[in-house]
Image 1 (cartoon, rainbow, N blue to C red):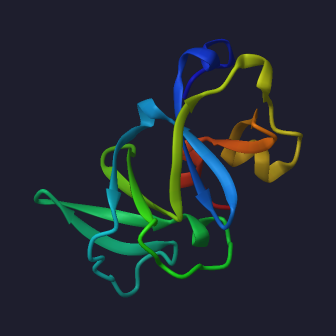
Image 2 (cartoon, rainbow, N blue to C red):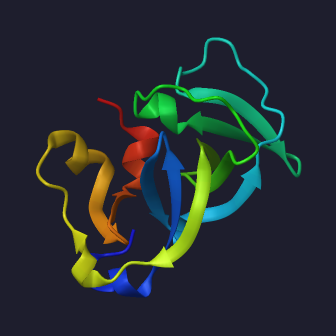
Length: 146
């Protein structure tokens, strides 16, 4: 993840989940896909939607809705899977829509406001066009649950 002094030099992929905006450094994103067929796996962690076959590799798909305990929305043609590099594997993140790729000006990024949850999964919050965009700490989102 980009350190605060580098924040203005790094691009971010901004996506929405339940009308809220979140972002990841473009360096953490491998690719963005339209949602293919997802194979369910019984008995697996509830935040995992299932797996997809991406050019011969089996990729687990994590529902950001379930991870953040948000209501599940209807699937539509704007839904995307953001493929990110996990610890030893690529992992897909199911999001409602990818909105843009942008840079955040350093003066428009603030640290989390001190809430325990924010400290764990957010590295900061960016202000862009009157909106607040959460900058996610990818490893905490993928591997640490309270």
